[in-house]
Length: 83
Length: 498
Image (cartoon, rainbow over all chains, first blue to last red; front, side, top):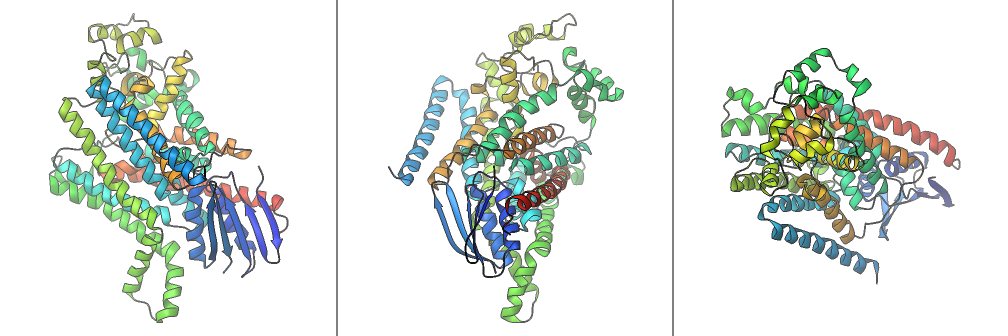
């Protein structure tokens, strides 16, 4: 099973970690954000509900902004701007 | 039908089915109310665990992996509230809590369990509630690791017997109240009977009262010294290490100078950062206490101290007239011969009936039940033959509690539109099974997991809880180090665009 990571535009990225359980979604999100530049946007798609709380608190503490959150068909999406 | 309506319908179907099952049990025999209580406390735990994303694995793992204190905070809050309820119940003699033998085995077992819970992606209770969310990796961890793996682990003999010190074997054989077919072989039998049972058991209340605790000793010793004080110290340390920097930076920008009031506000901000986890911490702590009260009340009402006695009254337990045969050296200890005499219970007329929230022993029973249907004799060992029994699944109260957790979580996940079946792929097969096995191996020597060995004991005044908890944190640290290395390696391959 592969983690999907795509550059979707200028300064925008998509990370799909569906199928992964804790702690993988939060580790991949953290490491992806570490590699990005300030102001760039990462869209994380995952289906492990408990990762959502952890990722949101991680962003709050690290100064990243959650631009959008969505849950549909058991899949969750968070759009994060690196702060 | 849209997703929300379909999920609501499923939530009603699951809840309705459990109500029907409960009524069915009740109509068969009033003694089954005991089992029904376990079902519904399990259901409540499942709902709260799912809503609060309450997983003991994430407490230390998310601190080390992502610097997030959410779950560590939630657990400390639950521990504080549970300890207060436990102290009250102990002071009115309505507690089912009992401390465990104290020793270094708790630290070793906790470390193994800690590694396992990080690999599997959830602790013992977390894996159950994640099954309710449709998580296939957790299904593998529970069935192959925590159930089958754990059952085999406690029944191993042969070459493993040679690892056991002679003193343990001699001490085990000296205990004549146990039939010799149980203690003559099996490494775990000799470890349990010849080593663990010789260890002392403590609660702080007993230590500070000289062995005769009163209400004040339960509150000061068990609750304050053993639970509240360490929990507050941990909260402060977590704040200093992981949450303070960001909060104080913001405050300094707003106010310029920082005082004690700001530090306290920072701790409060950390506690309330994830309201659903902290709120569920309070509710889980109180519910776990009420659970103890409910079980004790039933024991008082029926005049028993274990569900095994009720099973025997209902005709599924021990044949007392034939019991002496088990102690006859010429007794042939085949599975069918033993089961003819003990039925669903043990030689001592008991089954696993913890009297409070517990997870892993009933999973081992589930594994043993499957293995016995395949012809494996699990009744000739200490864990199943003398301590816990292997009741039929539908008459196993603690196992119903675990099913309650799964269904409670499923209902909550459906109501929040978060249920999605996720069959594991690739590496998750390995992490799920390996993590489950390590959790199973790490919960047996300590006679409990993150719930039975840590949460219940730390809040019940038994310092063992903290020894096991320290091991869990150490194990989680090792597990996170491994996953960090693994993730870096995968990212280097799969995210070349970076």
